[in-house]
Image (cartoon, rainbow over all chains, first blue to last red; front, side):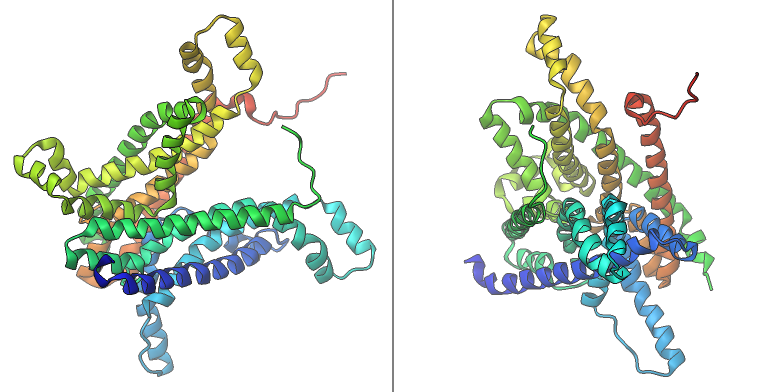
Length: 228
Length: 241
């Protein structure tokens, strides 16, 4: 099947999955940090966070990726030269994950910011009144409720993000799209191989939407919905 | 240090790239919107078989990366002998599918049309029931009701979501540079490969995109003030005693 390219395509699919999941983790962390900074009372934290979300969301992900991949190499060379270290090669995997995480961190920042604001302040006050510390209030009250409000936005961003992983093929990572491109060229059946890529992405996005529906149901237990 | 020559030497190419990016964005958004309106009506209130067909179309285009869609059309179609035969005949309509510009435009249009269809279909479903009853009470036919009541109202409500889609589309056109087109990103990639100065080349391109994004956001804010003013939060007014 697929003229012996099945194994290679599966390896590419595995790499694509790794890129997607690792950059999701990075983006979630950046999003939490960014949202905390944006909601902070200290202007020195708020202003860089505002610049981050505005600039990143105003630039195409491909341009950002090319900048990080080609620029990152030069930047790192400069640093290693100064420190007298050996030459470090920026690998496209790290560059891809870093860029995707950095870009979607900005989108997650906005999602988390809205979700934090949606938790009623009275509940936090009640927590403090019970003598909880700030960390306890965050862990027991703010975070679990924030997550419920954030889930729909997280789901949407994750759907966009999965599809953006195809861009790493442009910076030379042998992901599914790149391998399909190669296979299509050598067999003269590009349509067939790109169609396989489409099926893979459709399966991934469909599985994600089932997963997020499950999560939303779980986190919304005990929340009454207005009957339509 | 900033090497200004990277930017100044390539300024004409950046300008040409800007023009191409604007063309691709504007043309695909217009064509996509025009196609999306009838599709959205069919999707939300057509016969269930038709609605499902529209859903299958939007599901495919929303579930796969636009880069792969572009590659599928630009490189993929050449696989079929039937298409090759049409190309050999020299029919200009089919030759469009051999040009990177035509392929990019078709891909972008089909892609934005899929998202826009779902946005408008969602807005159509939230039409207040009273408006439909009023239209029926006035004796409007189904088609008149769609034309006068359903579609105008839905387009208004779809505006905020559509502005996001327009910005995504602007950013999406950057992948045109992967099929040899020289848009803003393509110009930046050329500038980079001539001078090996990635920061100047790509940051300048990013700034151009940022400016267009701000312009688009501003335009949509004006559009919302014009067509959604009845939904704006009211300004507090002094109460008269």
